[in-house]
Amino acid sequence: MPSIRAGLQDIQQRIEAAAVEAGRDPASIRLIAVSKTKPAGMIREAFDAGHSLFGESYLQEFLEKRTDPLLEGLPIEWHFIGHLQSNKVRSVIGKVSLIHGIDKISTARELSRQALRQNLHADYLLEVNTSGESTKYGMAEDEVLSAAETLFTLPSITLRGLMNIASPDEASARNEFRRLRQLLKQLREVAPNPEELSELSMGMSGDFESAVMEGATMIRVGTAIFGARCLR
Image (tube, rainbow, N blue to C red; front, side):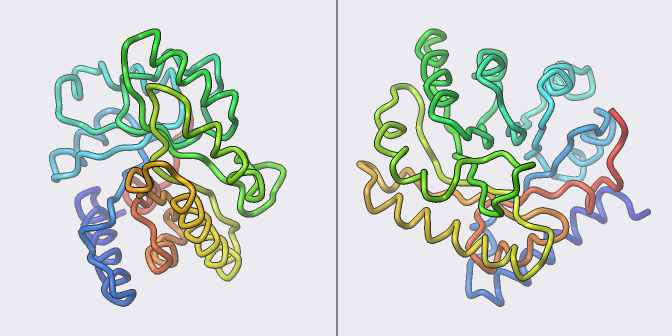
């Protein structure tokens, strides 16, 4: 298996190539190294290779990693990219730069409540189920605009954009990425502060180039950097 450094370099080169093909600035796309189930040593190896943005999905595992002696105190930008239940919000707020997996108004309300309670501010993305699969989390596409009226008014939190997990089929995934981009455009048209809505978190190891072609500002790649998923 190639080294983590080589994996990061390969992904960055592919991001740049896809961006150039799409007529985009490669610097407008950020790579989130998905480090869930990976030990602190592998994250440190990626950090030492020059990468500082990591995504975690399991709360307890994340809380343990951020205080691991190998990682504690490093200028790491953590994103929480997994599904976040309302009763776990209080434990993650203030510890990550961006929460990707908010998929209900009730969870956004709890995020706001906890931010106020802890005198903090939280940025988040709304997860949208573009594939329509019942096994995936996310708000239905036709619910997003109606929910926005409430989401925009919640204090101490800011909606920064949208995220999805696309279908495994390449053609379907490309279409879902395109729809998510169009949905973000619609959101911006009704937002009181449209400049705050700038992020599209979409694309993973198997489909990130299509996501870049359709406007992704963040891609989430784990396997292509760290190798096969470790058992928890």
